[in-house]
Length: 557
Image 1 (tube, rainbow, N blue to C red):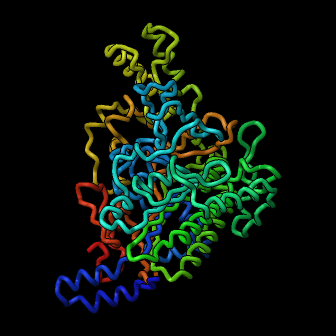
Image 2: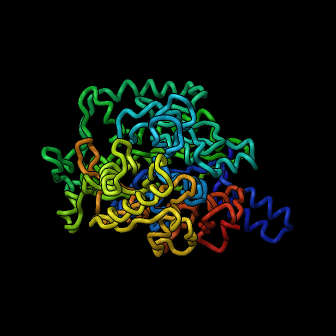
Image 3: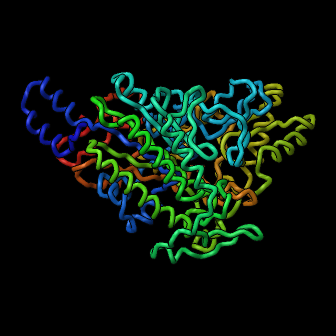
């Protein structure tokens, strides 16, 4: 077991600083951590980090006393789970990675369901994804084949075959996008336990954990105690005719396993699985550096179901802090020299009913008629096109819209232009961008908060997967017309409340500093790569290495 620490590594650098090149290389090798732990907390915005930072006393407090970049950016416009996770361990923008959204439309595929999920293989006969928000989705096969670039773990395996690249998450798309193509073990939550790639056997220890979890998630659960700092947030907010949020402490009745993932307990199960993988695979205890990617999804489910500013999120932040603290304490006990990076795939927006009471009177829900079906029917009627088949396709009211390929090229052009005119005139729409207009834009490397909306859309764009046009909504417009299905709030906009996320680094002995200027999540892979000796060529990344030494040494060299 290796017990090296950053303190001894720095001493080694000083000792060998004046020796020959070979000795310099030797000292560089000695500074490499045994284990990289890359954590993504789904929907953990920079706003949430700032709001609750003063209350942290566990794992998040440890990270807040490491190297802190409070203004990290998922710089693209499509701020959804799959695109966000695709940037973290690849170092490229989501469009370049081929992950333009959680779902997109492919009118060329043979199956009836033309919606493609970012983490499925739609080439497999008889599969269909269905609805990403539904409790029971279609029969799809989880796959990483849509990710067009390697992750840091993929690159590490090429230069160091003995290294282990492992991922575990609450969502398959989080595990797959962070783990990549060459994973030694990969698991995500499915139903009442953890699943893995088709054709792989579940490790006995994970199967045992699944059995353990299954015995408890159907049992009744008492409410969480309300931390003192959360008391002021205990206020009921009505949405719809008879539903409310803001006063729920996650108590569960008997047999309510279906709501398990929308509670702090869910992150606890993912961390349990991470602990099992560390123990079973002896991560960090070999001669080569290992990578463990962890996707914690409860914050996202809670944000969707209850919003970001109520009692529910306050309890979640407290429990996330506690769970991470226990996880790090357990890692400490192994003597492994590990480095932690924590960030998020995107931010989030609170439900409009609460925002309108808290200083944002313009907050509102989307017009239910702003969708591809309704707009398409209007366009077809105006243009005199045959009724029956849809002329427009989209996965939601915003994002990528696709014109039917059953039409002639001339008809397609008229449908596109007519639809754009109708949508752009809508009071809730900020901008509509054509495919070719976006394609002509160069992705900038300047400060991401200064990017135009067009540039943000370009970072999400892929020429073969993006729509004929892209719809961007105005600020504070929630693209959920009704809360009847249980979602009250969401994300996905090009605005900074969805783009800004914290980027935190910690390693034993690291010198604390905080850099308030903006950085990007595409900087993470080059930064971690420099620590473990994996060089990512400049032309293969959209990011840059961040020097996290905080002293006279440079962690990027």
